[in-house]
Image (cartoon, rainbow, N blue to C red):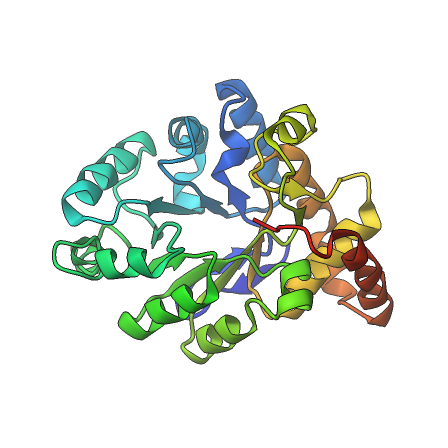
Length: 288
């Protein structure tokens, strides 16, 4: 596993991160196995959220032996301070820790989210105090809308951002290019979700019947090694620090198994040509 400088946080984090949904729904024993695999392969960045079902509880238990050697990250989907403080305390308890290495606003996807979060009584009244209180070493946010993300950067000096720097959405729409440029100029740590996503599920039945029922979008099939590695290389070529694979163990382990190859043999013209052909199969489909 290679480790990469995570913006100005002072952390060196693994080039693949563990998304907490991997631990969700599969039981404590399975979560323990998944986390043990991650630790054995050098993963040191673990990301979870209260909205991920039972993931906080399961991941928290699995990480007890390793907490002092990993970076633990949590989020809040609350937009009002009064609700977020209760949620934060519950997350700390479930994850058996007294602090988070990064605490993020979760899913800042609409300007209304920004208006409420940064308005009177908004969650930023809590988040902006967490460093001083020693509860969060760094603060960040996740988003799916680039304009919303850029607005967040204007309003607060965040340390990190988590965003879908995806091969399809960047090639087709340029999505993420403005954000990563702005984030790098500010010295932020940049996390990439959905690098390994092919498209949106066409319906819930398709998701349930698939190999990846926990994933909110359709992952690239792990049997398609060329597609998976090309997509990972594309995200890395944009300048992201770390990949957060979809929330299933198959996608996570694929990323771990192929990250060294992707870093040692970066995106080339053949990879781009391959992805251009794949783009034709998803053009016109929704991504999320």
